[in-house]
Length: 151
Image (cartoon, helix red, strand yellow):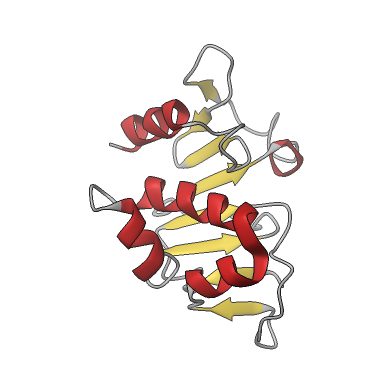
């Protein structure tokens, strides 16, 4: 599986993660799981993916209730999850490159600016290098820092 959510061409937020969910999903010939139900991902892949999707909803909900957004709108029209880096980065999208494994391929290619004292969030225009979306690595204070940058 290479991607989940709305198509990359329609997404305005793209989350790049190292590993896809492990549940049994029907993907198309391109390895895309289009418009999945978040509740299905949580049911099949458990608490770990609930946490990932919750952080994505907090970053995407634009002031709406993130819980409702996660359960009804996330990945339907505005967000896509990729499990490999794209070959190019469209300037009209925001890319969240999550975790060191994915980031290691980008660091050195661009000058990233640290948004926090430990450089856990680094940015270069529409590219955001951020921790893996798990509460231990990506707590609410870093989510707030991300949202401040986006606004």
